[in-house]
Amino acid sequence: MGEHNTSGDRKAPKLARLSAAVVPAAGLVAVLVGCLVAWSNASAGIGWFAYAPLSNQLFLGSGMAFVSQGTQVGLAVAVVGLLVLAFWAGYRIGRRASPTDQVAGPRTE
Image (cartoon, rainbow, N blue to C red):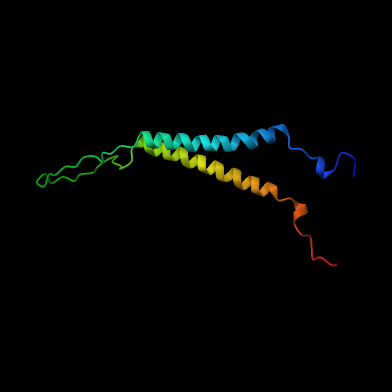
C-alpha cells in the first residue's frame, strides 16, 4: 500500500461532518415545530349534532373529524421529523461498524 492509504488517517469530508450535524438538527426542529403546530391548533370542541327524527333524510357529516386539519398537519410534520431522526440514527449505527470489526473466520491459536 502507499503512504497515503493508511486506515488511521482517514478523515470525514467537511460535507459529511456538516450533514452529520444538520440532519439530526433538522429532524429535531421538524418534531418541535410539528408538536407546536399540533398543540396550538388543538380545540376543545368536538363539533355539533342534529336531531331530526321526522325528516326521513340521511345525515352524512362531511369532513367531520375530532382532530382539526391544522392538528393533523402538525402531527404529520412531527412524524416526518421522527422518521428523519430514526433514519439518521440507523445510518450512523450502520456506518460505525467497520469490516475490520467483523470476524473473517474461525480463530486458530
